[in-house]
Image (cartoon, rainbow, N blue to C red; front, side, top):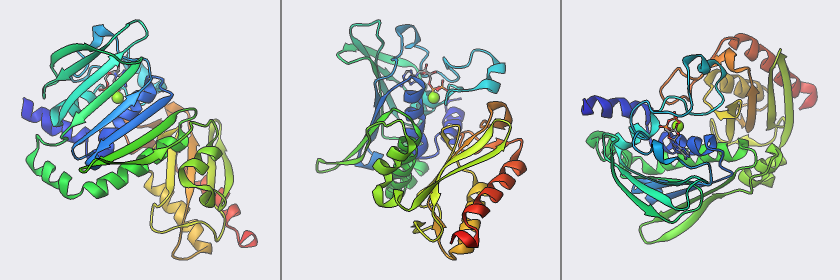
Length: 332
Ligand code: ADP
Ligand code: MG
């Protein structure tokens, strides 16, 4: 049974960035306004997500990391009106199966925090009092140490995984309004570097300037496209002939209702239309799709990065028309 659990867990947590993503989303779901990500050796040795959110109440300690424990989904019909990032109660249980998980947490009703240690099956094995502000710290040490083959891959690819993680954290820092992000990495010789630091502005524009820099921002123009009842796209995109990415996907961030997602068909279309004016180049794009929750499904793949739209062709068509205007020859 525990082998099956490990294999399933390996499908929710594919790599470093999907692991940290789950923790950051838990912090955002808990209403945090400050989220700090602390990496040791690019995440290979450990990673930690520290927040000032609601904290976890003591009656949830025992069940916290058990499979399918979630405090977010009361009834199945809720899936239709989903507003939290998490809803399946799989992240913490998967992280237990794949690495060494501990949690430190305190709600506003407690005067002290509690440090919790879990075993690989998600059982709470140690509990002690400690000092902490209201909020939660989740620490994962030695991710994948439990899966020998994955563990080797993980070490070998760590720089690439780290790069992917930084880009994902940038995505949250861009889109999350009023949330301060800090990410640091400490390498073997205790050299600590700040990877990301934001002020938690409420405007996408300010977040772009902080995360991607003023030079990048000055190559962009705002874009708003209305698709249909309640559906729209807005954000920023490279001006014709300006602000090209070095390679495919470089500084391209797509969101659905503030959730970072992969949308290959949409990326392809955006690249295609931009390249009409600038062959062999890729646009910088920060685009948020506002879509009623009933019109799409994020529950397609275990890591929730893929998305299924019920009106995909209408969305693509509206985007095509909107971008054709931006990139029409008269604008270039
Ligand atoms: P899900 O997010 O799908 O509910 P998780 O396994 O990610 O499942 O988390 C399980 C539960 O643990 C959450 O429903 C929530 O109640 C609690 N939790 C996890 N992380 C945090 C956090 N940073 N702050 C407050 N509660 C948390
Ligand atoms: Mg979660």
